[in-house]
Amino acid sequence: MKKFIFSVGNKNKLFKVTALTALTLCLPTMASAYNANANKVEMSQQKADNITGTVTDTNGEPVVGATIKIVGSSNGTVTDVNGKFTLSVAKNAELQISSIGYVTKKITVVSNNLNVVLAEDRASLDEVVVLGYGAGQRKQDLSASVGVINNADKLSVRPVSSTEGMLQGQLAGVTITANGGDPTSAPNIVIRGQGSMNGDNVLWVVDGIPGAPIPSMNDIESIVVLKDAASAAIYGAQSGAGGCVLVTTKKAKEGKVSLSYDGLYGFRQATNLPKALTAEEQIKLANISYKAAGLDTPIGWDTKVNPYIATNRTDWMDEVFRNAFYQRHNVVINTGTSSARSRLSYAYDGDDGVLIGTFNKRHTIHYNGQFDINKWITITEDFTWRNSQMRGANTANPEGGVIMNALHMPSSASVYNPDGTYGGVSEPGNGYTDIHGDAINPVRILCASNARKRFSKFVYSR
Image (tube, rainbow, N blue to C red; front, side, top):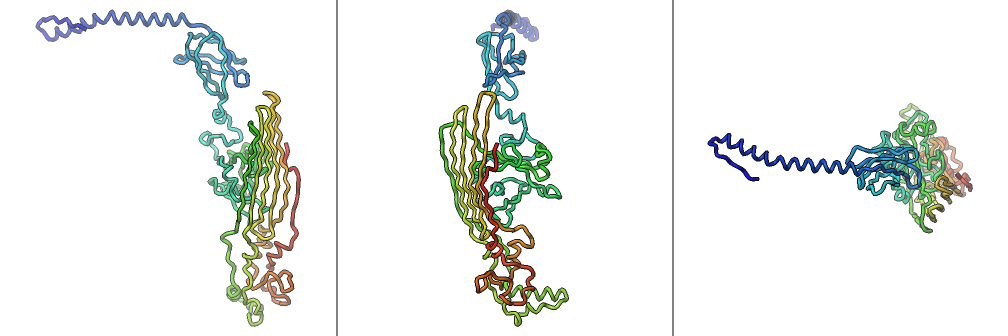
């Protein structure tokens, strides 16, 4: 820009003349820019047309209440009950179509009649509909306390014989305790401590069905533990105060015929077993106890009269516990098309039990099928057949249980008498058996009883 400077002998006057000249020269340019913008606005308004369109989902169903908005503008509309809309918009403008539960989509207007297809947003659906607290639900979207296990495939290879054992050490606030080594007894699960005076059990919900059986550990997809009353309230009075464990099993998938196998085997043993008193320690403790009670020690504790009690013969913990062989095998066949899918699994679980004479062997067949008749109707089949052979032991009874008797039996007693019969607390014909109370040979309890169970049936079908 040229400056026209007139020397008038005053600096202030010189500045004013220069600024005024510059402003005068800019006015034509600003006016031209204003006229150009006005022409553009006028041209855009002239190009705006009414367009119509339909918004549907991937199944062809209309999406009601979808929002159609012009990008960069506040103008927009929503679809009616038939998924249709009308909007005044310029050609080549960009539209944004959105609806709850669907992926937001942007399109460019190229015609007066638009057909828009929205895909379902699975993550969004999980955030909006909190029903049953599935494994796909994000923790930050819940106010209740929920524990989620998604690595069930890795946990299924643990050398445990029950689903409860899979959870051990995996979730905070969930305590799993085994019941004395009995392979037929499921471990006890306690969520955040005992929830009631009556000791309510945990409610197991499998695929949305309370109390349904779990086919096998290898058929588990995910596990969700509802830790408090707020999260378990959805199951009403059935949940009680013990909490809920939700199990989702694997389903048939679309794809070519596939065959898979996995298996494991190993040994298990009881650890941290209590150490029983020796024969000498038992005699010493008996004398101290009777003396402290102000009573005379029974003559049966006198080693001169009853020398049998002075010799160590048996470590009863070693006699009742053993290294137990464990094995599990699982075979799965899966096949499916877009309209029909099937999954068949066979599982064998063999647990010899760490207590002698105990075992639990199970054969399980699980079938899941899904058949799409049309886009509205799907038929689902699910059944489980199981054959079980088991022999357990009474480990929970504080008086007549195997472990308590193993602790109470004197170290001087023998497992077997010389004639092959099961031994007692003293030698045959000895008249001092009463000094050891009601202790029973635990080996006899485990081996002599015929408490064997066997059944084969459909345990679940729907």
